Image 1: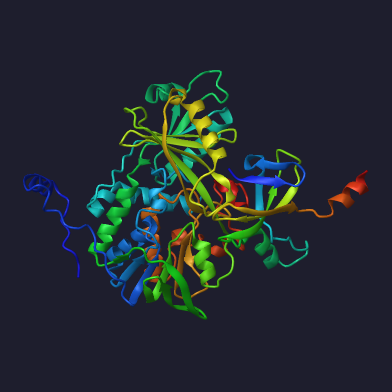
Image 2 (image 1 turned 45 degrees about the vertical axis):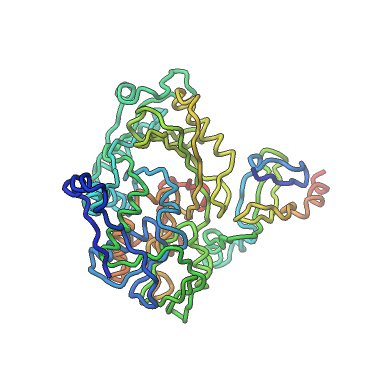
Length: 426
Length: 94
């Protein structure tokens, strides 16, 4: 039974103002799992929910379930720094992330849910003349592949973002920046809730607190999944469990993957008055730091991964120190700001820093994994192309090289050129 | 913070060490077939729980260590030198 969901509109907001907000319905159902589905997506994160939504919307498919071991929005969907951008360079990645950004631009309307996507610019600082050459190269590639990019001089930056450390004697003086104006931030929880609500409305069953405990595999086919809420059989099974991909891969007896699980920390300070409009990225001399200000006023920032393999959803102290040092060297005015919370999420780090979206050795199993430290921005396109892969049983031209076998072919999609060591792609 | 008991230097903070890779990985002979090289270079077991892994005491004695650690709780069970024949090697050079 589909739920009658109240649409968000100016009229409904006004009407509910008069009737004490009593006219709002439940946002999505809480169904019991059925024993049989056409498609089961394992993982109710942003990618899994988006996949279910686009399967139902773009391909008009019914009888789909998303199973989630915790609750939706409780994994990496709620543990990121909410940055959306498409400043990638390599073929495959470029088109993919640009498509994602285009979907973001209309996402609130599409889902009838305000995901608070704010295109407030993404600023990558550079600190040497040679870094300008590298920024210009990226700028040209972005401009020529249908995206937007600008190069801002130091003078322009000083006017636009007055609080950065522009000292001439800084260890890494700021020369200028590469800017993507259509990039920005979104409200991460709203994206999870928006996709869940929209998918549920199209008939998708979202089953929370349902953990896959075993996989019944017969040769080249998976017949059913054993879960803590009973056995669920499916014609097609899709994994979107980045962070825990290897665990499910081992459950299906599929051997090893070119993936290691690492943890990535994020931080938020006490709320401040408006201080920073843009997302600013500082990455020089071994430092890696990105910062933005949320709508509530907290400064949200992050740095590198923790450098060693881990499934613990808690961070280590050396990175807290590194990130704090970067924050102070970039914005000395933050010296007395208090840290409110910090947390960590488990990410799939892949051997070249790029994701996997492909068919697998099992005929009816599809894989979506390896998002490294950048899965949030990818969510809409990830759902879009993964749905296309599942529905048509073949990868789209854009993601055809994002398969597990690419390393065997020598086809690395390595944006940073760091080589086959997962921790170096942070 | 994780602390690792280095056999030479004693118990030190994790920030003095750098993580290497999964300890069971051994590199095949140079003329081995491509598949075994692919396995060693690209594929990982990515164990959830107890595993043996390599660390280097980068900011200490620089030895490579074999550490048995739980990847969920970060509890360390044992630490030993990765190169067991180090005494022989030292004798050879002195």
